[in-house]
Structures are given as structure tokens and as C-alpha cells.
Image (cartoon, rainbow, N blue to C red; front, side, top):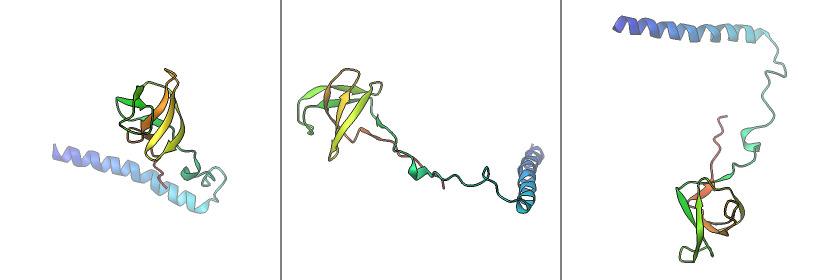
Length: 117
């Protein structure tokens, strides 16, 4: 069992190393072309990701306060747009129900794009 595992590991490492070695020897002699050049647009130049609901449901309130009147509920499946931001509160329009109001930024926020440079 142990010798089989070692043999498989050696075969996998050999298969991974062979293309890398041939690419470095062939790549050293060639001149980079437009297809192999680094793209001009980086990850940081992309627009921010859209807002999303990160809870099962979020209460839509009349004012940017947790003690204000509840106007409705924003679910993950609802479509909504964000009009403005005040502190940790977002003024949204729930396009599914038509309700306008404030939701907490603790539960509704943009996902963060991870750039691997």
C-alpha cells in the first residue's frame, strides 16, 4: 500500500514537472507576444461587486435607526437597488415589493473581490 502511494506520488510529480521544464527551456528562447503579455486591465480596475443580502431576511425601516417603524422585509431572493448610504445604513428600493426604506449595512453589503496578483 505504501509503495503504491509513493509510486503514484512520483508519477504525479513527474507529470507536473515535465511540462514546466519544457516550457521554461522553450520560453527562454522565444520573444513574448501580445497573447502572452500581461493584460492591461487589473483586478483593481474592475467595478465593485453588487450589494447582496447576507442574512435570511432583513427588516426595511422608515428611518436609519433600529428603533424606527418596520415597513417590510427584504429577503435574499428579492431584487433591490441602493440609492444612498448614511453611516452603516443603506436606503434601498425593494423592486420585488416596491417598498422603500433603510436597511442595516451589517446584513446588506457588497462582497469583496479578491485579487490574486
